[in-house]
Length: 171
Image (tube, rainbow, N blue to C red; front, side):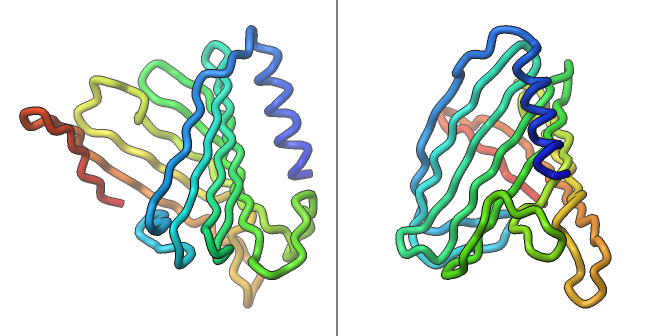
């Protein structure tokens, strides 16, 4: 079911015109922080690649630490509206030292989580940037099995002071 959703989104993405490779980058940081939480305990490499077609884009992003204490692989289809965008992020978080199967989508066994997010981060002239995300799948209470629907709100204020660009973030 989960794989079917991603396959459907990819087929929609590819049917909306000329797909072009639009961006690639590799980041390196001393530690990986995600929404204020440190994940892993070593330096991390973060490669990323994005393909685009009209108002659609598709990003593949990964993170892995030098000592294998953390790894992640995300796939993100995005649709751009005029002043905001909507994304469906598939987070794949394999457990270090375990036998992990990327195509295992069984309840309670899968290493995937799915988050729906809305944001205005690509709007260049936005005075206040925001992102709202909610986990739809893979975010469960281990004791009860009920979904949490964890929701996250992030606000940032981009500004320039002389030759320095800054963007304080609260989330």
